[in-house]
Image (cartoon, rainbow over all chains, first blue to last red):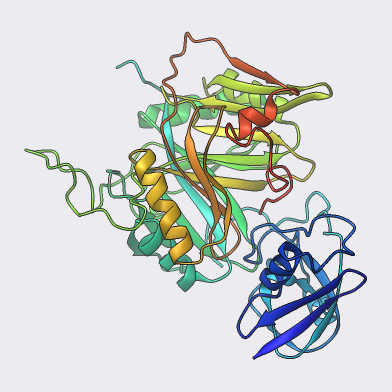
Length: 116
Length: 306
């Protein structure tokens, strides 16, 4: 089973079952299938922590891994603004690359000495 | 004893999004050992070649990153002496009671100009596995995974690192082993309290309190290659490497834990003594300084942090 990820204005990627959308997009870029990208695909930690690979999902269904709240707020996530590395397509998707949000100073959680 | 005051990095406390995956990553893949879980859910880990109770603390959180980086000092009296110097320098110091982390004595903590919390403590219980001390074999428990020998240093990103340089050298008696100066100012510093090329490093960055990586030492260049095999075999997200740093000369791989916190495993690096001059890099050669074989920074070096 594969799903088509249309990267708005750039091209298409083929994503396999249980594959991170970003990994499929990296592969598509390697094969020259995202020629419309204005610059290199932003790839960082690939594990939901750094926020570099933010996309807005315009269409389609997916499931997600946890994403660092310093990169994606609950409201962002609810409206489909997510990290491409942390979503797995459940249907064909259309996504738009989004510039990562640079956190305002002080938006990080205060260092805690104790647990949750 | 020639090495006094701040002895070495003690522990890093990281925030993780998924505790179970994180424990698997740090134990099975990187070769650390789980020591204990605290009442509040934090998990304490150590490397097999370390005596002290733990060197890595994982705290489940909805944001990745680092809570604090702590150093061990030589004696309890050092804590009082450093507290007086830190307060005189202008940073408020708070106190964390003994036992707040299992196996550790009292700690003092404060926030530096780059927004990071730093702590000092003098006492740690011993825990297993640890190096044998009577008729010692080269290890007690057979190394596994990447076979990390010790938590070695961290690289932190934040603003005002020139103030960090001033503070660490004047108040904590660190030395600056290496630095990068760009036309518009100081980009990065590598600071040491020992004979290692670095015990903590900072890169100038607009956002405070960010983590670039926590580093674990491996035995040699072959072990770094083996770590590369493990990274691919278990589909760990890799950043760059195996390669070498010009700065510190370390042989290295950067990769990411399951929460997107960057780890480094490395071997080598030169010996630093406190009478050595600071090594300097400028804009023309900084690429070689960061990644010696590629001779340029990758895009992630200055932009991907947690």
